[in-house]
Length: 306
Image (cartoon, one colour):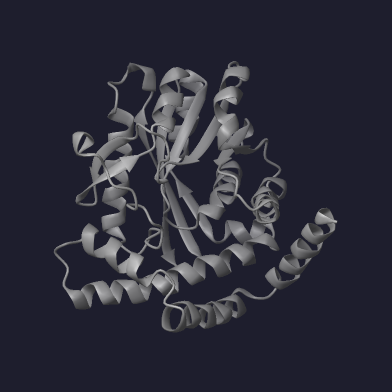
């Protein structure tokens, strides 16, 4: 019975996704009005996050950023729905890439690469990023398996819907690899040692473990995931930072930057700190382009870790 509901829901989403993007933006405006002006969805979280991250800004500046963020957030949701029903050719026109050769050269050198990124741009477009790289360079890294790491949702029904939508880009671009649940990553890297591959991970999640690494990020002590650095060092992976900039409505540009060619050769903490520095730099270049509604700093940091 659950499978039937999943299929029906995906069918409805698919049919809705076929509407022109400007229609999706029309609904985005309605949703923005409901979330911001009626429900005040996470308004205090957004304002607090912006105020603490940019203490030099005045109240009116924070208010303007908040208003723009609601538009941005709802547009991302609309673009994600639109993505599901459209072809690789349509997506190719929406996404440009540069620096993908950095990933290819790193893979040729060490075999496996971990790409770390933040909640910038539309994170649901990572599959399209891989496909765009494949279209641009047929002999590049994307000819090998690419694994997109994700954290499964607690609601099983919702998780299956989201997973199916994320896997659709793999099918559109005929890519090798798959989605990989975060709990499976460590075992997967051990059982696929000889495989030339890429692991993509959103690395600015709020950590849940007992010993997170603390860095100064956006003017405040911030707990960061240790997993990306631990896995890349243990498996002697190269680490590449990827940034997705939203350069216009429905338009994204992805760029890549090498953090290290072999994480095992770096001092403990280097990879995490460097990722935080690069992410902060890019957030400052486009302050709307991050997930400010996320409760990123909800946990108190012990005094001895600050």
